[in-house]
Length: 374
Image (cartoon, rainbow, N blue to C red):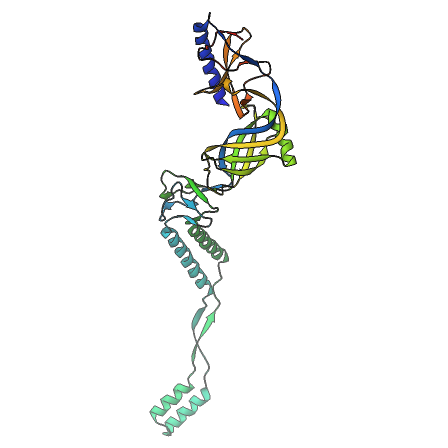
């Protein structure tokens, strides 16, 4: 509670100045000795609201965005395209890798052929044709035609296919897959429903590994707040018995009920309080992550608490305070953390101890350092 330290310092300075001006003066007023009494727990505390689920949109590759830049406050659905990087250079990489793979595969599969080899043909038939032609039994034209039919056909004998470079093929296949993966990364989808709560300074360019935008789920939400130590045991017992009621209150007065989902088992040394969290649905869209709201937590279980008359509470910019009578019988000021009010009395969560003497209704003429007569 940093504000308490600041308030204490401010009040101390005020006391020093007032003592110098108030010495020698006195005032008659009513004083009440502080004591504790049993009261049901009813606390209204400040809480910071955060999303239960959030995600950062982080592109895996760089490039100009061809999609409409995201804007703060924009509503997003799960599976919706939130960023589209210019895919032209990545498509070209896929085409080049595929062409190289096709060429290498075709070269390994195609057979080669040796020089033509002459077959034996029908040599006896050709000898007969020679005799017949010499005897004049067949004409020159017939001789040529019949010799062509009896001539051997030239045959190209296939040779063994070149050895396939399997390592090279595997390498090219991997290059194709990598290029396709890169192309797939050009389109970025939202993994959750939510609202854009932050965007990069230049939301029209994607930079690989850098956050482009933050999307927070609007429901459910989490309210985080500090609970004074004196209430921890009662809240733990009430949670177990089911008698605990919690809600988060919007500025309009509307509220959403929730559940106490976390109560620290150890005190925060910096605040002297215990951290607690309420999880609730933002069904009416009353709350915005990152803002502060009031939470109300109550149970019929009673706790020994300090209360003072409402008329004793005074407020300055630094917060609430009360006037007390110190051990020298002089008026002093004490910064306090106030709780709920009931029947004209206010619960003091922090700042007073049993035995302190509080001025019940400080007169306007009261100054720090005055002698107090009760």
